[in-house]
View 1 (cartoon, rainbow, N blue to C red):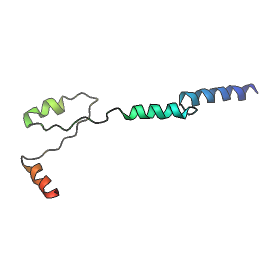
View 2 (tube, rainbow, N blue to C red):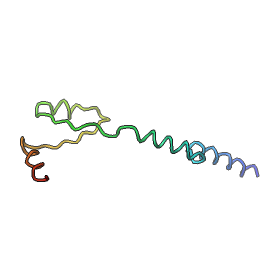
View 3 (cartoon, rainbow, N blue to C red):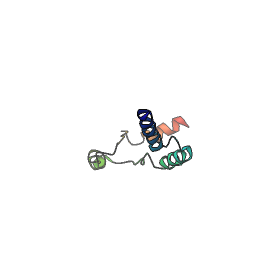
View 4 (tube, rainbow, N blue to C red):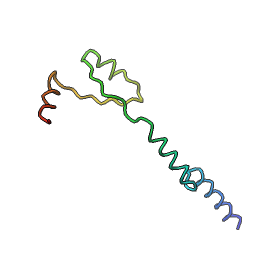
Length: 81
């Protein structure tokens, strides 16, 4: 009987830590976490800024680069519209 009650108390503690037993609190925490920005911004840079903005970016920052010739995006947006 002691093993079962010990297991039960451990399981309850785990469920409490995971907020499974309190769905309102879990929902509030989920909503709060959703408010955190996941993405930065889109910034056009010149070739001379590439090293500073991309190569020397912090290791915890992901950088997506789209290379294009001047005027190419303008032509692309006209084709789409």
